[in-house]
Image: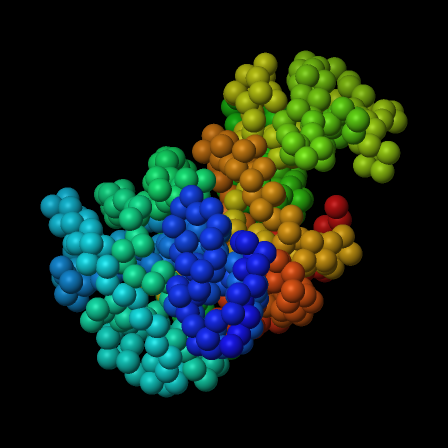
Length: 555
C-alpha cells in the first residue's frame, strides 16, 4: 500500500501501488467548481492517467491553474490536428503563435491550399464529433531512434529534427485513435474533457479559441491585436526565409557551427529595427515638432537596453535624447495604493503622481526650465536635488516607465508631440509545428537569471512573484500595447540556447518540496530541447546582456 497526501483536502489515504490519479480523485472530497484536468505530483505536472507506485503528495488542478490550462490547450491542438487529418489526408497543421486570447494557426491541404469557409465549418463539426466520441489520448514511450523513424515515415520532419538534436535516449509520444503526434507536456485523459473551445477564420488562417482562465467553462474574450499580429508575422516570415522555423532547424544550424553567424544576424536585425524607429522619430521631429518618446513594456522585456540603444541612434540622427523615468514621480511610499492583503501595489497607476508629471511635461514643452525630482527608493520619498531639464532645439525627451503609454499620463499633451513605443518579447520559433513556445517563458527566464546574478532574488522568489507580475501587466500595461506607434520585438533568435547555460544551475537550486519547483522543473525540461550556445559571441551592447551580464550599458 502507498500513502497519498492530497493538498486539496490536507488529508492522507491509502491506495494500492500503480493506482492512477483518475482512480484517486473520487476518494478525496473537495469543492470542484470546474472539472479537474491535471495534477501536480510532488510538485511536478502530471496527467490524470499517471500511475503512482510510491507515496506521494498530490494536488488536483482545474483550468484556472496555468499548468492545467497548458494541458488543456495542448490537448485542443491534438484534437484540431486529428480532425484535420481525418478530413484532409496529407494536410499539415502549423500552430504559429498566441494572439487575441487564442492561438493562430494554418492548415494546408496536400495541395498546399488553405481551407475555405465551408471546410473550416466541416472541421469544427468533426472536432465536436471527436469530443462526443470521448476518444482516449494514449501516451507511449520509445527509444529516440524508433520515434525518429516513426515520425520520418509520417513525413513530420519538424519532429525528426527536434528529436535528432536533443540528445535524449527515450522519448514519449501520443496517439488519438489512429493519429500519432508529439507534445512536450501532458494531455487530458480523453477528448470528452474538451468542452470549451472555438475555431474561426482569422486573417489568412484560423484562430483556435481557448477557455478563459478565470471561468474555464467560457471561451476567453476575443481581443483584436492587429499590430501585435503584424510583428509576429514579420518575425515568422524572416524565420521561414532563413529556414529556421523550428527549434530543430536552429539546433541543426548550431551543431553545424553556424551559431556565430546566427548571433550576428540576430543582432543586425534588432539594430536595423532600432535604426528604423530612430529615423521615424527624427522625421516626425523635423515635420511635426515631435518632442516626447514614450517607452513601455512588461517586466524583462529589455526596456533599459532598448532606451540606451535608441538614444545612440537618435544621436546619430543629429538629435539630443534626454532620458526621463516615470519612477522618479512615484508618490511617497506612505501614499502608495495597497493591495487587499495590505501590501503596497507598486504597479498601480496611482503609484505615479501623474498630475505633477504632466504639469512638468507641459512646462518643458513650453520651453521652460523645470526642476525634476529623483525618487529615493531607500527612504521611499520623492526628492528635489536641483536636477533641472530644458528642451532645447534638437532635444527629444525619452520617457520610460510601465505607465508611459497610459493616455491618462499625458492627456493634456497633443498626440502630434508624442511617439509611443511598446517593447514586447514575441517568441516566434516553435519547438515543432504543433508545439509553440509560450511568450512569457522568454521573460520569466530573463528575470530569473538577472535577479539571481544581481543578488536581488533567488530563483524560487522570482518564480513565486511571477504570477503577480503577470496579473499586474495584464491590468496596467498590456491594454495599451495596440496604442503604440511601433512595437519592438526584443525576442532573440538564440536566446534559449544562450540562456540554457546560465539558467539551468539557477533553476536546479529550487527545492523540490516548494510549490515553485513545478515551474522550475518545467523550465529545466524545456531548456533541454536547445543545443547550448556559449555567450562569448554575444556583443556587450546586446539586448540579452542586460540579463546574463556583461552589458556595456549601465542602469
